Image (cartoon, rainbow, N blue to C red; front, side):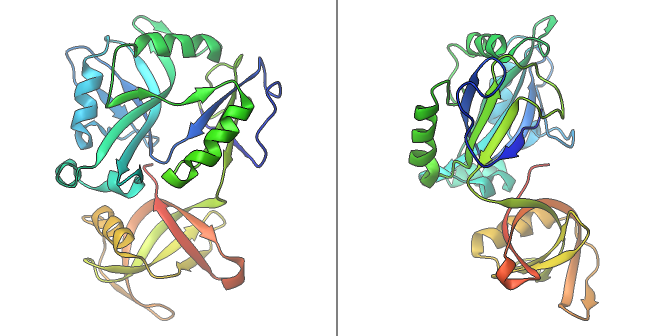
Length: 281
């Protein structure tokens, strides 16, 4: 289920049954399937299994009851803040650099033998708390409250750590894949979705990106990628690049199979956009 965007934090009675406020994390969205003796599955939005990329999470999920299905976010924590770019690195590289990775659950879709998506959020939330009682890192439950003032305090206090904003959900709402009524996200940055279709520079050190926006237009990213961003792109593009092309406007380009990303529009510098991050779609 994907929330619709909003600019204002809803009042406590603005959504069906009242509002639950939770922090909006910066990570890979994934549905987690505990399957007993079979390997756990971490299904991305594009239905790719991310479990092989996050073996510690997969092992923790395997210890949960067979048939439990969670919705949540894979998040990386490094040097005192959420570090989305670390998620695209190998598990070995993350371990070497002491990057902590967690699966932060915010909903429960099934318990053994029962699909609970039609039940109200207030009931699913109680089931989620019971299901993960006694577990610890790398599995945890998202920070959530029904107190709007407390949520606003969290939003301000946690922004320096990379928390993106808040998600507000109606406590009486069922879980509906791809439906938006009753769930609202309040982001503190106005990013837009895009596809990275090429980059300038070299495969070892990309310099700038060609981003295709939702309306089909293409824009160059500016400023140039910093070292962390360049490494993120280089690792994600490995094995997805096609032969270089000579573009009349941008010079030598390295086309890649499209990589989902977020960018910031920069109206003062059209046709440029600012690269924010790759998405885990």
